[in-house]
Length: 87
Image (cartoon, rainbow, N blue to C red):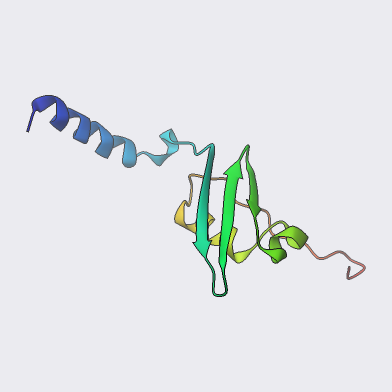
């Protein structure tokens, strides 16, 4: 293997060991749900998902799953808070 490639592999290992150096700015994935596929996007520190639950709550199992996979590389989503009036 060429020494230049070996150097790049070593640098990649160092970068991966220092996740604070990496900031995810946007991506798009498909999550295979129990009933159908859902399109999840992240961009400009904002999540979106095509499932009905997300449209009401701005969070869902699909976005939370991706957040767990990318722990520390994307900002945590705030969990919904029930209002004092119960609405």
